[in-house]
Length: 113
Length: 122
Image (tube, rainbow over all chains, first blue to last red; front, side):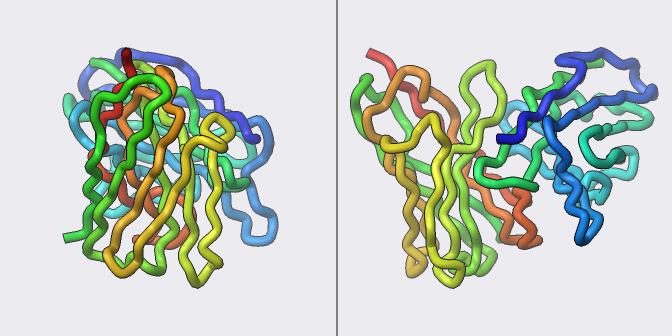
């Protein structure tokens, strides 16, 4: 199984500043035939269903603010939130869908103001 | 409206059974691969099991942690997904989410239900 490891486990960022969350996979999730990274990011807020933010490592889901961006390739990925807003307080998870089953998630990163 | 709504959670004793249901609407359910994902209190997300669409063969897959105890099924005539949970253990306590990749069809989870809480306790 592919193991996903996020860092840090938690971070506190001031309003208006940038938040950066890292995700590392135990093996590459880049599919060479289509040059796509099978990596997604989700946002979890209490009392709400998880929300897809980013897929293919860098494609933003419809309706997601453009302050959210994803980058990286192979085994190392980053979720960046520019100009942090109060509503961005949440737990963020990366997930690989390159080699399933099982679908595997990182352990989560708790973002606070 | 495009949505997934889970039901059937509750309190059950260790060793007991429970069946969760998920009602799907707003998309072509019969063509969708469906999964269950859970989140235990204070823990992260864990994929539990999946069922493919009938046109993809309808096969099921389960996480190692639930293999032989849980089973995923579907009723395409009712747009319903199920999770039969047997031999429940305390560590199965979690919110169980019904999820799908139906909106994009690309194997990442683009639609989630709010979840239903399962508590295993004596």
